[in-house]
Length: 82
Image 1 (tube, rainbow, N blue to C red):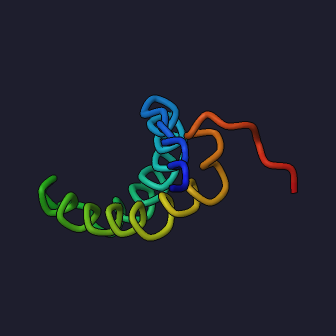
Image 2: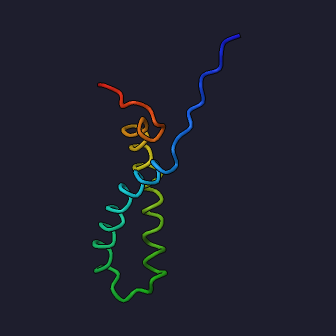
């Protein structure tokens, strides 16, 4: 029998901090771009436009980038030397 590898326990607090630092600039940029184009729209109209952009950006761009470049930080391991 082979020994089972040690389970990695990622830090939710660290992941939250990194996600906030990555998502905040994206939200701010989207608002600066879309607000003039959606002037006069109700809040829910703007939200229905921004929400899919944000979700797709987080799922397909931000989260994979965090995992690739900062995964060591989230799982509380030493930074790899490249």
